[in-house]
Image (cartoon, rainbow, N blue to C red; front, side, top):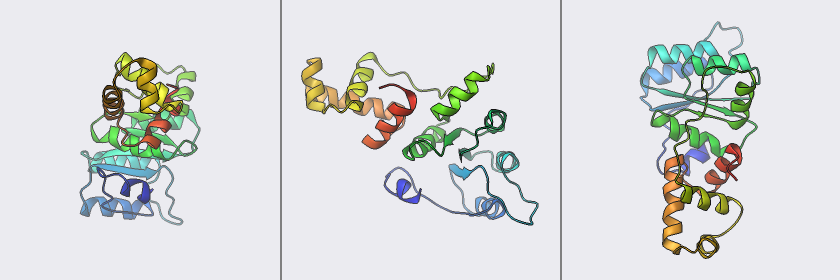
Length: 198
């Protein structure tokens, strides 16, 4: 996870914690914009904040910190509670790790990001609450470029196929990535797979 963030010029890891108590102490000492936490950070023998209690505690004590939760929990009721309790990001550990960075970028600008598998599970529940990822609208041309790129076509091949200038296609890809909150090609591939845009 640290390597993922270190590779992104727009992100800096300012602190780490390996349990809920040390996390809360670290947040009190070190200001941050986005907290990435595992849903389960148990502390044997300690009645500590964990899971939903941790999310509620962070929202209460550090209201300006956006929360991204990484989990393998599949219980839809818990997933819904994670979002209701204030998490801006909810990433399935089984999905590509690049989505964590995407979730952080979304959370940093106040947009929700939920892994596709969780969106599907929540939709099956028939919840009347919209847990969509609030993906910004891409233009039809940006969607064309992203889909072709995700299928393995180069910028030059896309330009030739769509009869556009290479610089135009490159700009459309870059603009789409900025809108989606992804910074590199692996992140774009992961986003397209997760969202079924390909």
